[in-house]
Length: 117
Image (tube, rainbow, N blue to C red; front, side):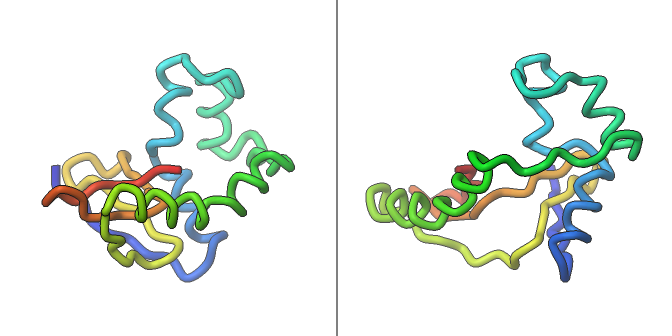
């Protein structure tokens, strides 16, 4: 699969771009494995018929701790961080509705890996 890097100048535009298809965070919902939302709710959100999910205190804590978790993983794994612009996503050239917005990208064992925290 060929993935094209898209970058956005603001978080709001990045979030809007995420509504144009299905990303990695949507996979558990589509597969019926998410305890937090249903496929119908996801569909309605993507169509703009439901408001975005409000950030909970737990979600905010997780986001705040991501940099430290990433640093620890880099130190213990020996991976090397690849800089990617903030507010970016990789979109499939063959299937533009498919995209992935990793927390980081790293080199590990001679391979390029997407990091999700």
